[in-house]
Length: 176
Image (cartoon, rainbow, N blue to C red; front, top):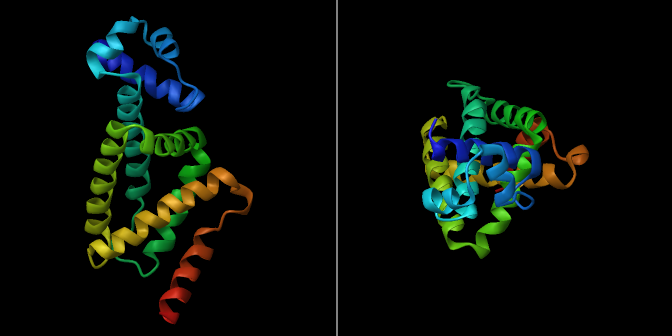
C-alpha cells in the first residue's frame, strides 16, 4: 500500500474506534505511520479524508445489507430492514460515525457534496433492486433507512423492528 491507502485505512480505523468528531489528524498520522503534511497533500484536508473513509466504510456495510435483498419476495422490505438492523447491531461504530458525518455536512460544503453523491448512488442502486425498479420507492426506502439509522443512535432499545416498520408502511399506504 502507498501513503494515500495507508491514510485511508488509518482513517477508517479511527472512525470505527473514535467516531468522526473525535478523530484528529494526529490520530490518523499515528495509526498510518505517515506525516501530517501527507493528509493535506493527498486529500486536501482531514475532513475530505474522513469523508472518503466514511463513504467507503458505509458503502461496504450497505453492500452487505443489499446482498440479502430478495429478488422475488412480497416481504422484500421487511427482509431489507431486518438485514439493516443486523448491520446496525454488528457495526455500531460505523453507523455512529456515519451519523456524525451527516451532522458535519451543513458546515462543510465538500462533505455535503460527497454525501449527496453517495445518496444519489444509493438511490440508483435501491431503485434498481426494488421489485418495480422505481425511484419514488427508492426515495422512501432511503429516507426510511436514514431515519432508522438516527433512531438507532438515539434509542436502540426502543427503535422499531423490521416487522413494525413494514406493517406501519402497509398501514400508511392503505390509508393513503
